[in-house]
Image (cartoon, rainbow, N blue to C red; front, side):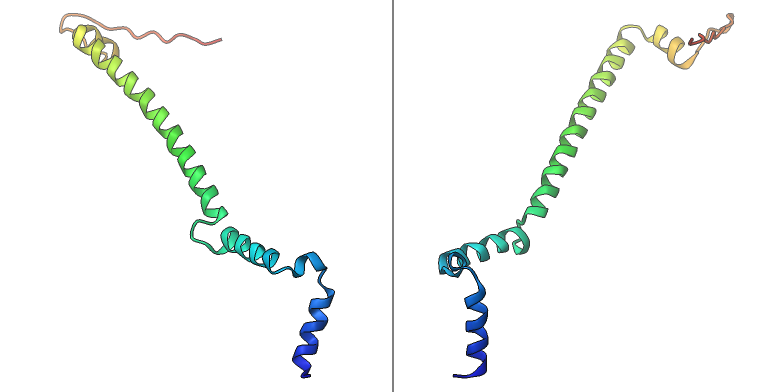
Length: 105
């Protein structure tokens, strides 16, 4: 026998018998491939799930912002003068506008 074969047999004999089974070896290699080396590995999947969650949060935020914008649009369409006075502090030529700040305690 050559030295290479004896080295391999020595290493194989140190492995517990259940792990010498070719099906266990194949399953282990398959799992290792799927977890670390595949294009759809676990790390990629976790990143994708996190990106999807971030996008869902962004979607909810922008839907809320759309609601606020639609309410402002409705207010503007109903009463343009009041909206202009409150939002942009517009005034007529013959009147004075006083802005009072409320103190928050």
